[in-house]
Image (cartoon, rainbow, N blue to C red):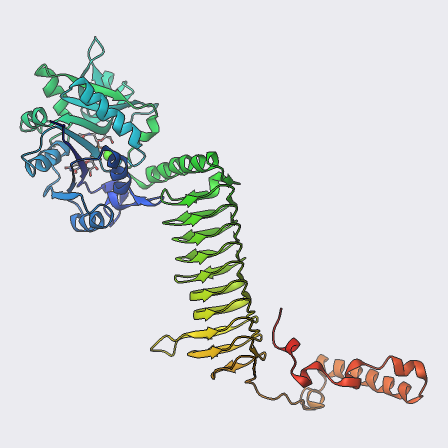
Amino acid sequence: MTKTRTVVVLAAGEGKRMKSALPKVLHPLLGRSLLGHVLAAAAPLRPDRTLVVVGHGAEAVTAHLAEIAPEANPVVQPEQRGTGNAVRIALDAVPEVDGTVVVLNGDVPLLRPETVAGLVEAHEAAGAAATVLTAEVADPTGLGRIVRAADGRIARIVEERDASPEERQIREINAGIYAFEASRLRAVLGNLSTDNDQGEEYLTDVFGLLAADGQPIAAHVAADATETLGCNDRVELAALRRLLRDRINERWMRAGVTITDPETTWIDVTVTLARDVVIDPNTQLKGTTTVAEGATVGPDVTLIDTTVGARATVVRSHVIGAEVGPEASVGPYAYLRPGTRLARQVKVGTFVETKNADIGVGTKVPHLSYVGDATIGEHTNIGAATVFVNYDGVNKHRTVIGSHARTGADNMFVAPVTIGDGAYTAAGSVIVKDVPPGALGVARGQQRNIEGWVSRRRPGTAAAEAAERALQRAAAARANDGAGDAEAAQSEPVHDQGGHPNDQLVARDTHIA
Ligand code: UD1
Ligand code: CA
């Protein structure tokens, strides 16, 4: 018969010192909740069942569990009468359970899977009734102490508030992670007293009871004491976050990622990076983000649930739910929102916002634009300061722009509207009608100049005086030309010969390259 393994996570406490509306175990820590980290550490045990004791904020914790670990079963502890009470209620819910019961406090998120596995293997190999994970720490304040007998074997665990002054000197602490043999655990759980400073049933008292009964109990010392750190307030949460950040960054650097400034680089445990990725300072990579080989991200970038292709660059930008293609370039100062898909070699430049936008190979949106609900083909250039007017106040509409199009600066595309392949639009146009392939769409008023307006309407101003001087210079130049010598004719201004390029409304007018 193979031994069954049951995991019990204790997550019913309020976490008073967090001073939060959110239950403590739901506080986020680099990609997972505290509870999510603990469950992830236990997952490689391949438990036959996982029970999570919930109480404070039970509804929120249960909803979160359904999302992150649907196979886990919540068990409600109606009143938080201590960790022993919590385990008793959990085991009462599964009377058939035998084999190994692994108990984990829900607020010990830095625990490594290997450490939990090591504890369970040592426990099962020794045939112990109970085994506790311990650590030697410099400052054991607030933690349960491991009291050992003269022969070095563990005798009992004492909470700091119930400990004698000598016991408080002990620096070996209880990490709050245990393995038990189910039947022997059940046998003593009913005998826990509440005769302690908190009037609670302490799970830790199981050790003293089993020892007194002559049952074999053991301690498994964690190699890395930082793994056993709990989280009781937000200062500790920040300290855990820094430790986890360093652990994650070190792992990626050893895997071939350059992290220029590890102290300002925050990578969720759920992120995937390839070799030769460069992460520049002040960068956060979150959620399901993946970055492919040779891409550069940062400085000052946040990527959330985003895919970055090989050799792409993202600089000083905020990106959420987007796909950035290989060799694409984003930023500085871009905001890419969900549904943005940039193909290979796309450029999305400065002060550009995109949303639900499919942008084809080599297309450029270089400056000051909003691209919402759009499909743009390949090798198209979108002029500066373009707005895709996607919202009529009630519904959103799509703009479709073809390949090799050149749209003018300061355009509005009032969706739904389609611009054909190879089409141009004139600068300053409000495009409300489709532009066929190869056509030039012009939608703007004609310019007229009212001569002398400033000197009539703004007399005596600096503008009027400057205009006066310029007009006098022009008149003097004309008088010189009138002398008729050949040299003067050569220096005639271009616009006097063939007119301004805009008169023909040629391509040069229609966009900023
Ligand atoms: C506990 C241990 C202590 C150990 C420390 C490690 C006991 C009595 N003490 O102390 O020896 O050094 O963890 O971090 O176990 N919980 C419930 N129901 C309850 C009470 C608590 O589910 O009725 C849960 C909490 O949500 C938490 C965990 O059990 O996740 C531990 O409870 P907490 O109050 O934080 O125990 P500590 O005082 O830290
Ligand atoms: Ca605790």
